[in-house]
Image 1: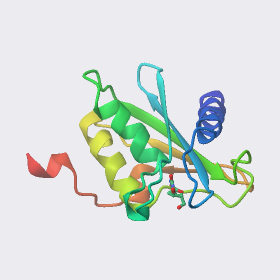
Image 2 (image 1 turned 90 degrees about the vertical axis):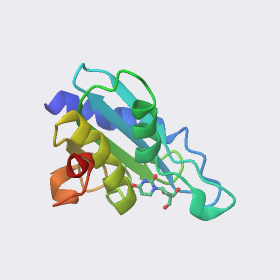
Image 3 (image 1 turned 135 degrees about the horizontal axis):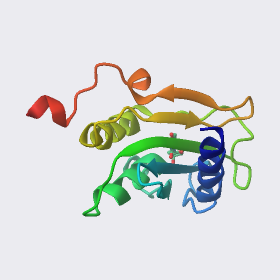
Amino acid sequence: MTTRREDLIAAARVAAAGAYAPYSGFHVGAALLMSDGSMVTGANVENASYGLSLCAETVAVARILSTAERGALEAMAVSGGEPGAPGQGPTVTPCGRCRQVLVELAQLSGTDPLIWCDGKDGVLEVRLSELLPHAFGPANLT
Ligand code: THU
């Protein structure tokens, strides 16, 4: 698990370099680990109409959900900070909207993924269910 964690954090840091964040100057990368061992990354994509900006986690989940073979979400790493320095500032945890977006994929998967949040003080490890307890998701609509 340790190696997977380090690999995923590293992938999130690399993904942060692809951020389009000219307004906040805060570059975030997310890396999803699927049960088949594949990784999918995303970075935040901002918009001149600020409220339309997309977080890195949401971009990564959209990439998975827009493919036919969705697979199961095992873990996600998120890292962010100043350009070129992801993980060197305060710990980045997924925003509330992203938690809900992640629940959609997790419930489809039947998993409660580990979430690894990078920061200068180390990696915070939590389950998605801890970040968003009693979540509403696709299971509530069946
Ligand atoms: N952001 C993310 O991409 N993920 C998070 O978990 C927190 C915030 C983005 C949104 C915005 O583009 C920038 O970081 C500053 O809030």
